[in-house]
Length: 354
Image (tube, rainbow, N blue to C red; front, side, top):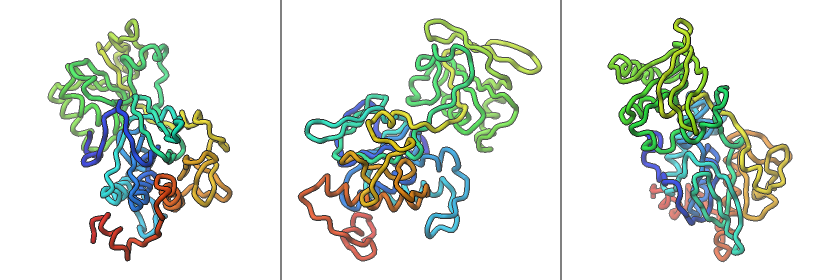
């Protein structure tokens, strides 16, 4: 767990969980869905491929100003995420991070089973797809034969730090992810090196300064070079050949290569869920934002309907109406009473402000 997930209910992968609503995607709209569902006493589990909540807001533009959130003349992507997390915190949602929703099926009893690529299973009566434009997937470096090493000694993310303990690590990249993991893994690696194609970094200045301090203490090797080829057999690296402008080619011994070259958006396994897609989007009604499959909803940029506007505020509206419909599915025997947070004592007690 990193600083950005401190205080959240982050679950370890590979277990089976039962909840009211499974939300695929922990971007702003998914986070607001926790709030709206929580007001109706519905429990949530969220699944997201990133290592922190926030989606595009935290991964692509954490410091970029946003000007069209009602009541907030200007807010950055990270600030908006922080406020949404604070707002939803009373409802104790569980998070399954660094996992991709890879499978979706319905049991004969009408329960949805969402399975992740790490073997986690979330069972729920309602599934809400709030995946934005799809899943973030890593940009792979154009290195011949890299596929033979992927998953065994070449990785594009860190899901469990202990898997890299005592290893000789080479980290590639110059952004926040590369620098953050260099700093986090340096204490547990037997050897660690960082390679970047230029002597300039896109990461936070504090991270760059800490990295350079490790170099000065000889606890980290820094190479300004390009990766030329991978060396090893049977999927196991023995070294990586780098090429520097001044010194030419040389080998860096390593057991693991972590490549952080950025992310791109793809619809991913959602395209295999059996949905009737419209230009890679999920068609929904505008009463409940339910798909053509009962109990399966889509909110935010992943959905489509006539007049759709891809705005965060539109996703917030969709989350509110979705929650009302979800309540009727999860608790069909209960009457749904519409209440205002400004006047309802019961809602204020749930929020801890009464």
